[in-house]
Every structure is written in C-alpha cells, then in structure tokens.
Image 1: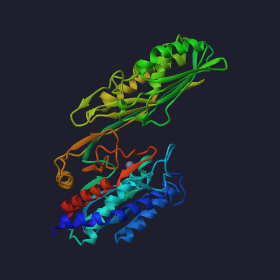
Image 2 (image 1 turned 45 degrees about the vertical axis):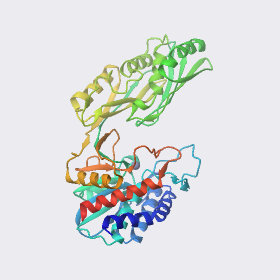
Image 3 (image 1 turned 90 degrees about the vertical axis):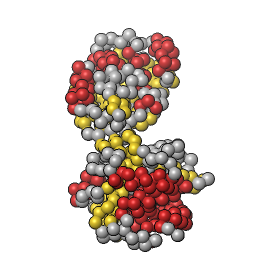
Image 4 (image 1 turned 45 degrees about the horizontal axis):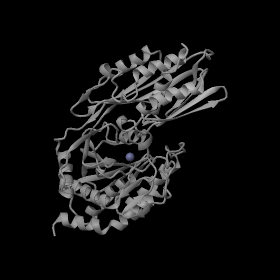
Length: 466
Ligand SMILES: [Zn+2]
C-alpha cells in the first residue's frame, strides 16, 4: 500500500474521533470578553486554547502556550516547513438557532454549532492531517506548526503578539476560508466621519437617524425620526420609491413626529452587491422630503450625493477602480447616526491591489470633507502571494490530487490571518457550493467535506515536508 492510500485510510478510519474532537471544542464558548490577568481576550478564548492544547498534547505533539494569545503544536524538531494558522475564538451566537450553538449537533452528515466551520472544524482538520502523518510514522524532514489563535474575530492582536516572538515558516496557510486558494486579499480604506451642530429648531428636519452597528456589516435596517412633516406625506414618498430601492418600509406617528423605518437585505460589507443597504435607501427617501436648510439636512444631502443607493463600487465617491488580481474596489456606507447635536458614520471599503493613498484615501477623505464632515481614516495595504511559488503549487497539487478538481488562485475582499505574512495564502477548509454560514445562526459543516479537507492538508504537508 502506498503512503497516499495509507493516509486516506487512516483519515477515513478516524472520522468519528474527528467529529468528537470538534464537539469538544465547540462546547467551549470562546467569545471575546474583557481582559483578565493572563487572559488577554477573557476567559472564553483562554479556555478554548487550553482545551486545544490538551488535545494536541494528547496526540503527542509538543505544545506551547503564548500567554493565552495563541497555542502552537509542533510536528517535530526539524527546521520550519509549514505554519498552519487557525483560530479558536468565535463570534457571539446571536439569535435564530434551531439547536444549542455550543452543543454541536449532527443531522444527516452535517454538524451544527458555533465554530463548526469558522474555525474549529477546519482547525481540527489540520490537526488530524498532522496526526495521520505522525501516527503512520511518515518520515518528514521539516516541521509543521499548527498555530491556534484566540483573537481572529476581533482584530487579530493574537498574531501581533505571536509574531513579535516568532518568525513565520517558509510557507504559511490558513484554513479559514474556502478551497482552492485565496492568494490575494484586498486592502482596506476605512474612513470615519462626523459633524457636530447646535440643537436645531427649524422645520421640517431629521431629528434622529439610526443605521448600522459595525463597519463590516452592510445593514438591512435603518430608521429616522422626522419633525414637521405629515405622516401621509412621508408615506407617499416611501410608496413612490420603495420598489425602486428594493426595501420594505413602515411609517408611524411618534408624538408630533414621524418615524420611518426601512428594511433591505443585510450582508457582509465586502460584497455590497449581495445586499440592499437600509442606510442609503432611507437617505434617498429623506432626501426626497422638503427638509429645511440646516446642518442635519446638509449631512443627508451630502451623503445622498456621495453614496447613491446601489453604488457599491465607490463611483460617486470618485474611487471606483479595478484590476486583474483583485477585481473592483467595493465601498459601502455601513454606519450612520444622527442625533439632535450631530452626525457620525463609517464606511467599509475593500480596496483593489491598484489602490493607493493618492487615488483612494485622499480622494475619499476630500469628498467627505467637502460634504462638511470631519474625517479620520486609515488605509491598510492589500495582500498578495504570487500563484507560481513552489509552496502555492504544492498546495494546489494536493488539492487537485485529493478532489480531482482543477485548482486555482482567487481574490477576496475579507482579510485572513495570513494578511501581511509573506508567502501566505488562505487554503480551505470550505468547499464551493456549501455555505457554512459563518457568524450566522445554525453555522454548520459537512463532515464528509472536512474529511476531504483533512486529506488535502495531509497531502499538502507531505508534499512540502517529506
Ligand atoms: Zn474565521
């Protein structure tokens, strides 16, 4: 029997153990909390690192805890070969679950639970790939290090800490996306804007506006309270525009004022074309009302001009651009609030590889400033690893060998752990066509897919470290 057949057989034979280990980790609610002494991300992520460390140690790997920022498991004491970056923290469970999010539940070959696809299931797949090679005694000449972080979902400070102590291996992949390979991650332009004013008295005017909570989610919902208008007039504007804007709406009297709410479709901010932005829809509606000339009205009209509903590529902001490697820049107004004394908001922009300070940040900042806002912004460079490196080619050939599918390199708007790590790529563990529903209710993974992913990882390690 050749080594490949032995590896496949070992992985198939350990499917139940794999599932049980994922269940053990899902049971640890590893949502970030306030820092405690020795637990920089609170007790949950630290408990998950401890459970993972015990698991890795139990399988004979040499384990090190980096002050509860991350835990590593080393395959052997050889020179560095591959680092595998996965994470043990999860986002909060939210509403709408059909099962207990922290009791991983199997049904028809699918495992449901928070972290099953992001990222505990994939992390354990990588661990089992290492386990297979170790228990089969496959000789390797380079080390494989599994690095399990505790802060991926809230800013990846864990990796800042880890890489302040350690150098990256010659090759790094992160099983925290989908197959085949994502070798390009867009950059980020992130403007935050605000404007203050004296309490206004003129009528009609917008007294409050509420849309969006976090910058990386395009919000479905937005609502506003308007003073000095008749509910029937607001209703008429909504009735005229709702279909074109693709939103539902409600208009209701609130004391002497009128409250108008819209409902679009939420999505990740890096793919604005998949959603219907509640904020820009409501701004369009408000801009069609006969509002008095005042600061709140100026803010609304200014944003209406810069973020016309449906423009997800920064065209009106003058930053639309695209390139071969990463496709079009995306931009969405994802947070906007008005109260009696001012307005503030935030914009999510995934900048193409060709974006620069000059053609992106300076243009965007100037447009917002010209609209009367005070702007603070930052820009992060994109990440790109050439597709023709021996490391990437070794991963692709393992993927093609195991799945029988043609591999390839893709670009994404989101960023992973490998952003900024030279030569790093995101590699699995999801397969196209199955949505694990990361961050949502009923997050899930297909067990047969994860077994296949485990084989891809084992063959990758074998290709690189034999
Ligand atoms: Zn993740």
